[in-house]
Length: 324
Image (cartoon, rainbow, N blue to C red; front, side):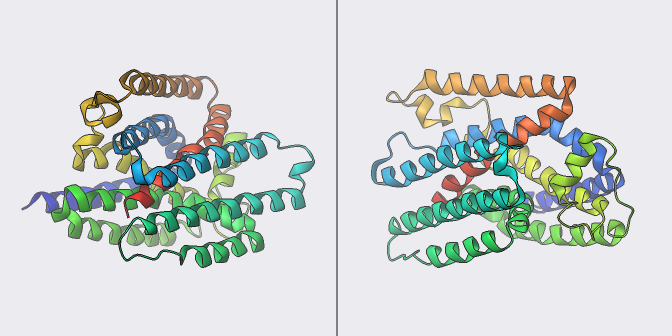
């Protein structure tokens, strides 16, 4: 039996166990997985991105400038809207309009990055990204609430796409097995549907339980059991955490946390070792602070975490598109 076969078996068995445990106790597992892994996986993402950031941008200067600039501007705009909740901006019409504007800017930013990446590849024309962006922007205006919810469920698959791209580079012999792993995920989602789609809704008698259900779409999709919605969301997020914390370091030695020599910005004599070490230390401190915050006031810390988490969501796209 090859390592690829072992990888496939371990992945499917882990997913089966996760689906069973999460389906049985979705609220408890939502609280536990975010407490344990949310901050850690953000740190692992940053560690991976730091290893992939070139020392000199060269011909990619415009690409990285647009990518990093977009992350900063979009994250700042999102946080401004988030923390402005409660005033006139958050009337129903105001919220829908501002959300649609943000989503439109987001997809146009993605289109520009796809276009710039296409220009770097010989005989490639990725200008198709603009019609696709305009189509998605139209959806953002027509159904802003469903658009925002779709991002919640699509985001975990971005990590799986990262793993697929990285595997092509460092473990191509595992690709076939990994594609079978990906094919198993819809099967588990169907099992969760048949097991819990008709179950009673989860309790929402506390602010925390209400927030968990709301995040999974219980208010937008009232005809579907919140038991199924929360279980599905936690299941996908658990795979997302699993990919960043374990699987990517497994197939890419540059992502192993303690191997700082694999980070060009740290190891190269023209790099910035103190800056990289300082940022990683701050990241570790934030993880510890998150654990402390979750222990003292889980609900508030969860809300703050998910507000600022938009930064890491946005940061994934420049690096993923660069790998295409």
